Length: 176
Length: 229
Image 1 (tube, rainbow over the protein chains, first blue to last red):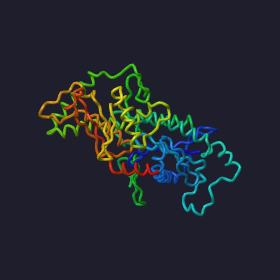
Image 2: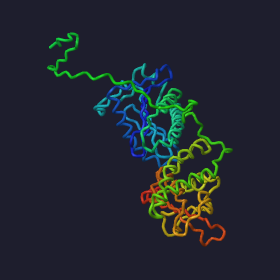
Image 3: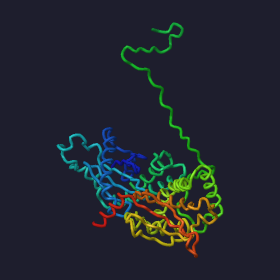
Image 4: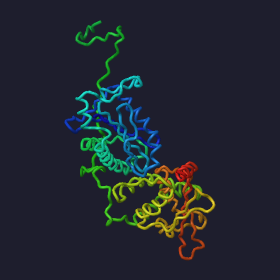
């Protein structure tokens, strides 16, 4: 499982980006995105912002669960009070995702036995995943508020603090 | 062509379209400085202990300094209020997330309706700033996008007496700025929030202040749509 996490500001501007892999079940914490996926991830997350804006007024919850899927990418979203969007894209098998000409490509659902065991361990639609993402988001939210409390941080500025990055990575290691 | 003085020097040959190799990038060096006790802002607790409130005199001193500064820079009462409002605005933006985080129970609820937001300001915001809820919450009878929050005795005005020639000035414009920042951050675009003195005719509360919240057109439209389902 590979993850791409980003924080989007109120003007749809990215403030923070991080790629990481799973640290559970023998994962080494390194994202396995191909070069092509690097920018496709940004596109997919950006496209999901529209859906976030549709659902955000229908619920009072901050964690909006899974908002969008594309191929086998799954996008989860967490909305802060100040309408900053924490977007988490997860892909169980990035090496097998086709982005170009996706209409004609076979469905990305894995068929071989080896891949289905990977999916069982980290199924993006399962309740365990939802809970893990929720806990991850809550921890990032706490670090985010601390960042926000800094009087030298203005709203919609990119977050460059290496300590913030460290906190997000630690939360990722702990829950995902 | 080899250099006759120094035959060991490398020869750069550009005929294949080669370019001069760039020097390797310098390793990233953080300019971040840690405080002497090695505790950064990320190590501090976000929950405040109830036993340590902020001292009113020290707030009054800082607020006094802000008003004096703004007074020397501005030409009119409206400008003073505008600048006070802008001083409060970023505080409101940041307070929203902090207050949501501190709310109990642990799953914070974002305000999505105008009434939720007004109650949040009337209760949660006021309690965190002044340790008591605001005194009244009213809706304008003439305009549907206008709401009023009444504070009988604003704490920020405790040590302020406004000179006669500036009788229109109400320094609670600072608090109005906090409200405006909070509403904007929550996704409720505002036309503006202003503070008005209403104590001249009031025997009991001479410092009575009305905060007038004017919601933007888009916000009202969205509210109507949500009401309709």
